[in-house]
Image (cartoon, rainbow, N blue to C red; front, side, top):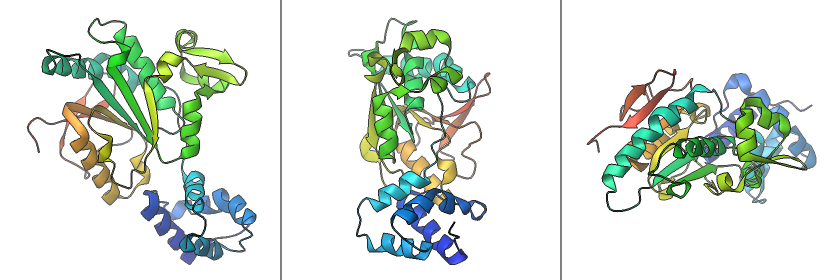
Length: 286
């Protein structure tokens, strides 16, 4: 197997960070070797220096995408970490709904949710299922009143998510039997998300290392276990964009091991009884 020297590692690390924000620390330099070996063999590159030269020349427009696909971490699951989903249905969504109802007295209220770094779709579909459970207990909102935009840099992951078919072992991992019966149907290759849930989710290819405020305004933003792979500077840029994209009283939900310490002081920290901490856009802050 090819080895990567210090110079090659620094060149590829900087290239990847500039292109999509992914920051590979020195202790994980082996990821370039394990994840790119097949690509280098296919391209008949005898070294990572030669591979870097191919990237720099930009002769193959798909090469960058293939690099991102290979180096992106696709670790996800339905209802990941458990307790944030109870906070979502018991606290976050009801509060957002209350605010929107007050603001939309003469029109139908809308709730718009962003799932950033959605990977293969487990997170946005988990959001949709949770929202549906909440809707069943309210008479002021319908499924048509809630939309979920799910974004990721990986076209391959997004295509998988749009298809909505998951292997049985994935579906059975964290999803209660009642949910499996209610929101999935069996198909030849596994279980497919039912159409009413899929209809709530729109998937789009977005690079968080670039400006993405054109996506519009949201009431709730999920960014769970995504920016942990980015530099501090890029984290600040992303969180600042999230702040500007959140509606009044909008919420930001991050991973259980993530926080905004040293990154942003623009949000109020909201603890909950279920061990989940989320962030809310402060009032009258511009």
